Image 1 (cartoon, helix red, strand yellow):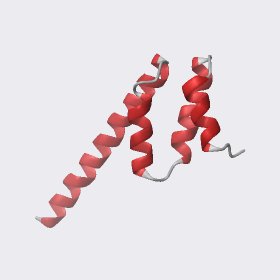
Image 2 (image 1 turned 120 degrees about the horizontal axis):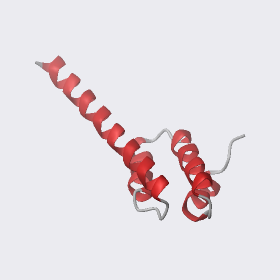
Image 3 (image 1 turned 30 degrees about the vertical axis):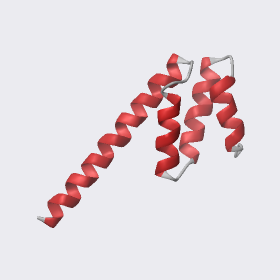
Image 4 (image 1 turned 135 degrees about the vertical axis):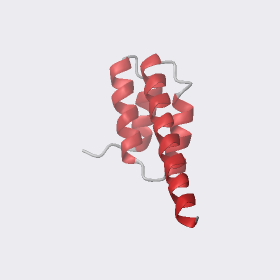
Length: 80
């Protein structure tokens, strides 16, 4: 079932259950294909009131940053 992005955002920002917030957050991130939308959502979620969502956002942001650095290093190596 595909859920509307606005519903997922509302759930990960406002739901009283940390587990529902985390599920909504990861579902939202996984449904996105634009890296800038993902980066923005990750940054925003690092300030979420749920520590579980904050931790997951930080983990995914770090993973994205590491991936982008590896890709940039590989491109630089190809040029040389």
